Length: 194
Length: 248
Image (cartoon, rainbow over all chains, first blue to last red; front, top):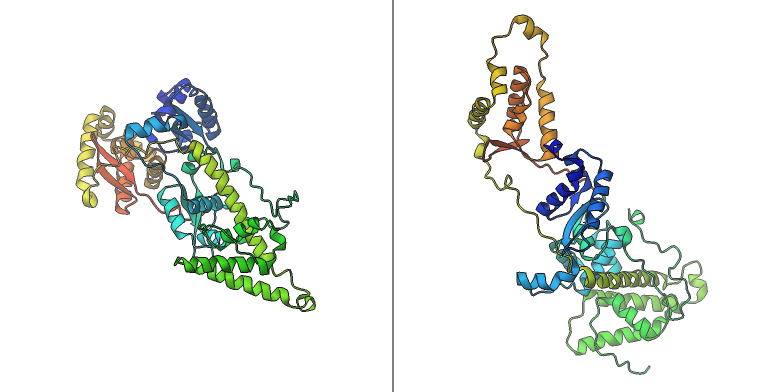
């Protein structure tokens, strides 16, 4: 069936697939449909994305997948048309929890609790319901706690293409701006926890 | 110590409160005057109590920890010689939390800008919404097979070609059933639901057709696939297995 599509039409076919799917579609999946390599698909998607500059929607190319979404400037008219009134704001505790997950993923809830100094199960629950994070695995320790990671929805609503694009955080340790933002040996990483 | 006049702000937790006290007092996180901070910290808890607010357990735990640090600080230096600064762990925790707060702030700015990017939820595939046949009635497969063969000239000619001679039978390769089983699974895995007709269509020999049919039967038996009634023909559906649980 895929043989019927000419190379020149693949971009348009991808657009059609993305429209029908709504969710992000991996380059791997598209590659298998068109018998091309994922990197070729990614190149086609990138080209396609350039064509959306004067449209109401745009094509987001993430690291491993791509997705169609509406442009941010049309949020108001869309909500008006759909009759959505809530603004979808995230609470302070949700944002903190999400930040800890995003910057350190994959992490367990108890790691989040530890950094925040308070129980974060409610915030994690909200983030799961809002589909900004997902259970990406289990930590191999007694009790096998869930590991949480961020997903494509997170990237979309935070304007990122990849978690590598997360803004850099610098922390001042005191009021006498010493210039050294980070204490030595305080790098918290996943490897450290494992 | 003069009365601190903070409006009773709501803090996310003890670390949040401590950071706020530290910034109000303009002190270095690595050199916290514990006695001063502890007093203000307890003052805040007292204020909460006075206003009849619920004080989370974490606040009390931190108060105890601060007291412990304070008492350690009062010990003569020689006693705690080889130990690190009793405030080190608290400082590290505060830095880590402060970093999370900064990150949350940065993310929040991004969210303000981009939260309006909406994506629609996936449409339900017409195949997926088809009702599953109860107990996978094999006679349906048989009927479907007859219909498919009737529709396809090619299949009909393969099946009705004159009885093969013994030599032909011996020479011709017999299609192994496992080959078909793997072929079908691979196809369903890559392209999703596939009609029974698609599976049979590419058969070249009688043995091919038989192997395909038996392969489908086998897969149904072990519940690796299910059949659903499509518009035209039976659809084979690969059953999902929980392979996603193995982490990275």
